[in-house]
Image (cartoon, rainbow, N blue to C red; front, top):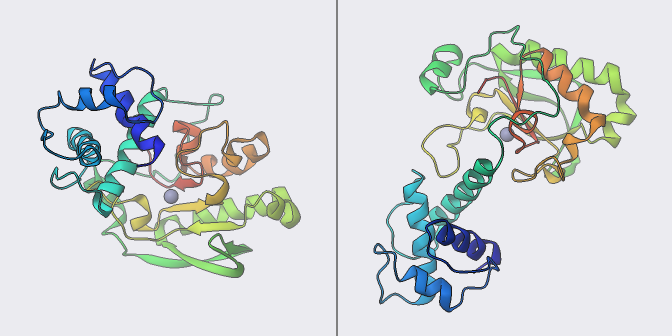
Length: 264
Ligand SMILES: [Zn+2]
């Protein structure tokens, strides 16, 4: 089992007052003594299964869809673990994180992301009402940088606004700087999928969210590591924010690759 998983288990056992000592990622006697006090975990399971069972229990307690508590690490437990780690990471962050006072503009009246019934009222059902945006500058696929695209599918209601933002980006930075800053590395827009471990749909499901340069802005990286948190990206974010788009990085300090036409 990965050290980071064991660390999460140990810190959560400590949080329950079941003192396991140092959170070192190595499951030893103290960890298993603590696990023995968790009544949901059968005592006759092998150690690995107990550890996995506790991850599943934590997921259940946090309303993350993990299925049954069986002590086996399948794909669903993997997704649930990722969602759980994200959630616990977010809880450690301040409720609203801002590098400076961000303008809360909303000229296009983007709806809130919750409840999703509001989103559906505004945008329609997931995957519907799509159009293609012809890009003001070519994008490269982040997962295959040899492939260049000149358009992609997005929701028709966000089309004009997104075109305006990307045109501003081109005029401000110019193509050479765009490439240097990797503002042409596209990580995807329309993708009908449920949020990891959850039952709600991702904002990508409506074609109202876009990801850029995911390699240097992974989901769990905060401002200390994410490339898009650097000051040279301030104009990039300003153009989106002027149009009312929301950066999870700028507002919540995670998922810096992502920008969406829905408010929190
Ligand atoms: Zn995204």
